[in-house]
Image (tube, rainbow, N blue to C red; front, side, top):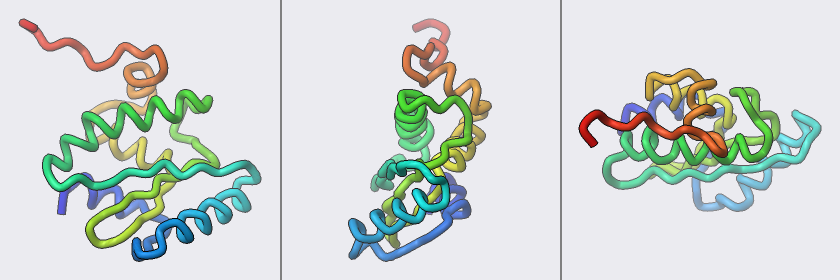
Amino acid sequence: MSAVVEVLLQRAFQQVQPSNANEAIEAARLQEEERTGQAAFSYELFVPRANVDEYFLSYALPKLVNFLHCRGFKSATTPGVFVSLFTASGLAFIQAGDVLEALATLRHLTVEEAYKRYGDGGTGDPKLLGL
């Protein structure tokens, strides 16, 4: 298993079999709404078959940050938003802020720097020298 996926799964608040994914996501959403008192959203991520770590650090992290930023979040505190992570072995639910912190740390960024780079209107990744 990928090192990044292992880090994410350690932060899961619930893991289920993917056979009833729709029902499980809805139940997690309702649980999150009850816990936070606000509308809850599931952000779905799928573990690819190849280049897993690169996918999460170079593609999934920027997309997640942009999604959160467009919804008004500017930190790892993201009440009402959780990630539904589909893996080969099951479906895991992880608080979006926990995923953001983990991926940013693995990318050697602070959460604030991730928002500066990948938030709506962000700077993106620095250009490589010679390109």
